[in-house]
Each structure stands twice: as structure tokens, then as C-alpha cells.
Figure 1 (tube, one colour):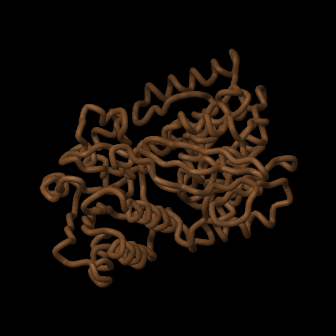
Figure 2 (tube, helix red, strand yellow):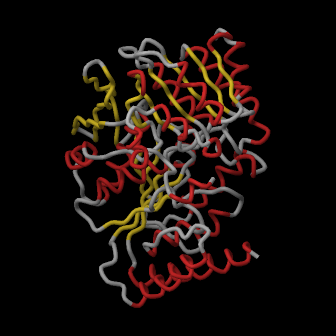
Figure 3 (tube, helix red, strand yellow):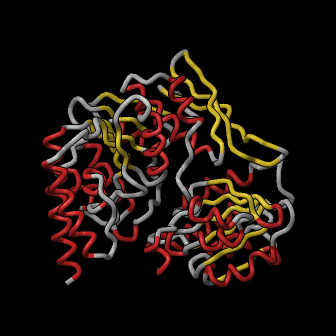
Length: 430
């Protein structure tokens, strides 16, 4: 019965959203890829909002429910039927009383199952598509026949780009670059390691009292270059998001210096390589929103490069879910890299036992590997492992709920609702 009601609600709010788009005709910027969608979407919004009336998808509203809610400017009703009835009513009101509707929508668009993107592109026709990364083993591959099938599903959005539209793509990702070569529309590449229209370089960690507080890098376009400082997070992936945002901004007439100013005030989403102060004078890197092989490897690289801080580097890695037949191999591969990157490895979840095995096989001492089946077990034991000055990365798929552990490890726990992911009331019961 719930499935039937859900389908009815999705059908109604989608019809409302389609009608509203037809009446208002905003420019649509769609962000797609297997890594970095939310951070890129938020970065694009930050660059555009000072000059344009723009709306972004809230949080990670990127599904057949989330997209129409974003178009209509409505909140998630979760499991409350009365809130969904209110959403249906409010959606109808918005169609009649349009008011000052945004000129630009920045939408994150994702896929979980085959056919998801096809449904969305039947009524979403983007003016700009931002293509982030297409790794060899993408998240959600468990529900597709092959990794190529996941990529093809995501590329459905790129193929729906308007004839006069623009593609912005990650030129450092070989698969993305190959796909971009097949697009006839105008395109802009962004990169760190290859020549592109928009480039990032000289990325460094910003220190305050020898403790990392953020990062700085150079953003360049043709003959112009600006310095960008981002406080509160780590990882070159945030620089990539900034470069993508700069490319989108240029389409709308926003200068590189304006982009740099916007990024200096930008705070990445919760659970995406955010810097937090931890107990025992530790440095926490909260990357608990979700996990996948390519994202876990990137996070480990960032942790390993913190040479100026930390007596020890500790990686707390939870299960990477929805990998299907690739799960064992990919967990072992992450463990292999962890062995070369950290002093201590903590794993959470049954799948992550393979991460521990991979680390052990590649030289990390057994005495420096700790395994827990659930986050509740880790919450009891991990605080006892920490020492003064440790740098601690916490990363896991959503189902592990590793943010619960981060809350315990935070120095100021009263900040949890503000800085951690999944702090809504509905999540407290899960």
C-alpha cells in the first residue's frame, strides 16, 4: 500500500513541478557524477547567488522525489502522510501564485536503479550539465549489470542537454573526458593535472597554530589567476568543485575574482571532509556522508598528506555499500592503500573486515588494526584509542551511521546538530 501511495504522490508533485517549469522557464544547471555532486552543486550555488536569483536542491535531493520537491521549493515529507498532502496542496498553490520564482535552478541528479535518469530527463532538460567523476566501480553498481551500465545511465542526463546548452566536465577523469568528446554542444573542462579551460594548482593545507584549518589553491582561466582560500575543510575534491563552479559562473558572466570571493565564504556540506576539533586535542576529518572506493582512496590520500600535524594518522573506515560482486576486491584495495597511508586502521561493518585484511596483507601491523561490527561497538572502544595530537579520518557509507561516532569524538558535542550529517528528527529513529 505504501508503494502505491508513494507512486501517486510522486506522480502528482512531478506533474506540478513540470507545469511550474513550463510557466517560469528558469535556466537549469544539473550536476551528475558518482563523486562530488553535492559539494559541486553547493559551490555552483555559492558562486551564482550573489548575482542571480537562484535555488539549489536541498541537501542531496537528487531522486524522483527530491527533484520535484526542489523545483517546487518544498520540504521532504518523510513518512508523514499529512506533510505529503500539505506538499501536494502547496505545490498547487505555487503554480497559481508563482511569485518571484528563481531565474536559475541548480539541481543535483542521481541514480540508484536502472531507468532512474530516464524518468527525470523526460521532463528535466538542462541548460548546463556539470559532469564530475565516473570511476571504474561507481556506487550503486550492485543494482546494475555492469559499471558501464551505471555510467550509461548517468550519461542519459548529458545526452538530454539542450542543443544550445553547455557541458562542464572534469578533464582529469579519463572516462569523463572520453564521454565529453562525443558531445556536440559547447564544453568547458576543469582539472588539476591536465590542460583545461579552468585549472587548479598549488593546493596546500592552511595551518593555524600548526593545526590544519582549511586549504588554499590557485584557480586559473586563460591568462587570469586568483588565490582561493577555503576554511573548514580539506581535500583537493573541494578545489575541483570550485573549478567547476568557476566554469559555470563564467557562462553567466561571473568573473574569476568573484568566484574566489564566493568560495572564501563557502562551507562544504556536512559530512564531506569537514574539519572538527576532537577530544584529546585530536583533529577530526568528518567524511561520513557516504563512501565509495574512489572517494575513500581520495580521503586516505588527503590524510596521508597531513605531514605537518599529528603524532599518528588514524583512519576509521566503514563499509562501502551497494558494490555487489565488486565489494570484496574494492574493500581489500582500500585496505592496501590504508596500509601505506595511516598508522592505525579502525574498521566498522562486516564488509570492512576485507579492508582490515587488505591492510594486514600489505604491511600494517595487526596490533594497529581494530575491527568492529557496528558503530555502537566503535563508540564504546574508539575513544580509548585516541592520543593527543592524532589526526583522525572517519568515512563510511550512510548505512553505517558513522556520524554517531563523530559526535562522540567531537570536542564540542553541542555543535553536532549544526555540523554533522543526518541530524534531522527522522534520522534519530533509524
